[in-house]
Amino acid sequence: MKLRRKLFASKDPYDCTKPQLFLDACKENIDYLITHCDDYKKIADGLGVHTAEDIACPEDIPVIPTMLMKQHDFRAGRYLVMATSSGTSGKKSHVRFEFGALMAALKMSIRVTRYHGIMTAKPCRYIVMGYKPHRSNKTAVAKTAYLTTFLAPAISRKFILKHTPDGYKPDFESIVNALRKYEKGKAPVRFMGFPSYTFFLFRILEERGLSFKLPKGSKVMLGGGWKQFYQEAADKETFYKLAKKTLGIEEENIVEFFGAVEHPILYTDCAYHHFHVPVYSKIVIRDPDTLEPLGNGQTGLVNLISPLCRATPILSVMTDDLGILHNGEECPCGVRSPYLEIVGRVAPDDIKTCAAGAADILQGVKV
Ligand SMILES: [Zn+2]
Image (cartoon, rainbow, N blue to C red; front, side):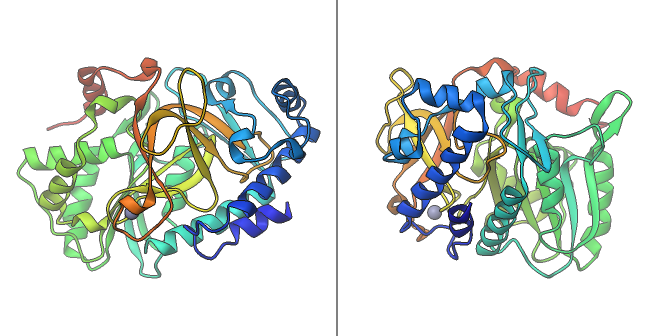
């Protein structure tokens, strides 16, 4: 996996000048998968792909739908770590990472978080708006949120979702108490986790007329998506206004991450809140009916491609998200690679109604 190593060692995470290295690293991955994963070989054969030489561009790589990964456990050799998706329907994807994949992911995380000024040496206090680690929780969301608390040295870590005999429950009260204490200190506070819980916290603070002035350098980091609370998704402007009003955190200190267990690439929004595609991946938008690739600016199914991992065939996965790829030049931030806008989902089975979702979140909260 020499080419993967080279790709993930790229100095500039948004370097658009390496399409050939990206394609070659994908070919290296496909050769491995065809010889180490019978299920993948069958799918590839069916699509007329027998060796890497049958691939002329990333669009030609056999695509595995994430829906299929939730029903079938693909394996391709030895692995060290396994992560699962957090599907509410009970069906989960299993993604296994071998040593080389973990190293590539580590290099990527360091490059990307340094680029966005998230990795610093200044110690801070973390408030994780997500799961407290527990041996019963193998979701990638829980693991990545916890890993994020190592991007700057942690003085303390607080988690909103506590493991109880009845499952995970949010404890907003303990977060409000912590904010009272942290406001008086010098250490920056970093929120990390689900946008939905963070947004609900803002609303609770606003309803109670509480506002804090958190120490300089405090940040709100968002990840894990809006999940089943899609319809509660606040428009971003409202979210930024509330962050400023309730915590004293400016828009420039709000960072959002995007990724999926089946595509563990770290997408981080730029100063204009766009998710530019890093050098480690390629996104193809496809026509929902014909699956033909569409041009930038058109809405279609989101196909995510990356040679990060080989222990699970996630080289090219088709999500059930609908998205648009925009030309990088349309964003004034200076990054030239295209950026992805997610506009919705094809099969909203998991999405609860607004009222049910809100009731779930607020369960156990004393306002
Ligand atoms: Zn940008």
